[in-house]
Amino acid sequence: GNSVTQMEGPVTLSEEAFLTINCTYTATGYPSLFWYVQYPGEGLQLLLKATKADDKGSNKGFEATYRKETTSFHLEKGSVQVSDSAVYFCALSLHMFSGGYNKLIFGAGTRLAVHP
Amino acid sequence: DAMVIQNPRYQVTQFGKPVTLSCSQTLNHNVMYWYQQKSSQAPKLLFHYYDKDFNNEADTPDNFQSRRPNTSFCFLDIRSPGLGDAAMYLCATSRDATGGGEQYFGPGTRLTVT
Image: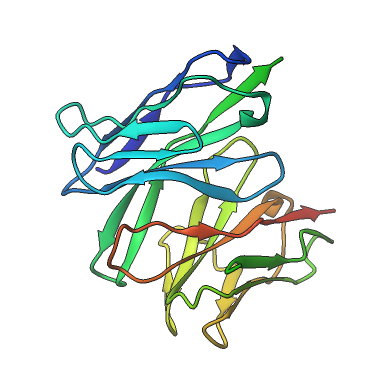
């Protein structure tokens, strides 16, 4: 089946530390891959995306590369800030021919806490 | 700015009392989705509209209904809320089935059932 697995949290880091949140997926076909971020009490915001193998998505200092050979899309940031504290969701998008829409399959989410 | 708006942000209802949550979008997207998110979990898709075509997920309880009177608005109706329906409800949109497949989310409505 189609699924997304991401590392369990919480991940606790000091400000300016390097961040990696691992994400691997299982999918039929060639999905698009996303990272969404959710701040406390808010909805999900699209952080970055990649639509094909070897694409690198980047935004606000975060990066992730679509690795087809390892079925991975790990999120990285070189220097985290307190304001990056949030829950991060890895997701893949499947095109559903019945219903004509794209279905998002989410990982369980990883909570990041950054301390000064 | 084009966006997805949800009202109210917080809703309190009584056990068994019908409640309606609303979502509007200025993105002119074809597809609108409703998700339920319980604490510390990933969002769970309840249903979606592609234009006027309604599509229910197989495991969505009958207690949840939806209406989309026009392109911009979509409503989630919970006919008889139970304590287990307390959650964050997220509305999302996407342009259509082509493209990268990203969805744009509103800020959510947190529902409390007393």
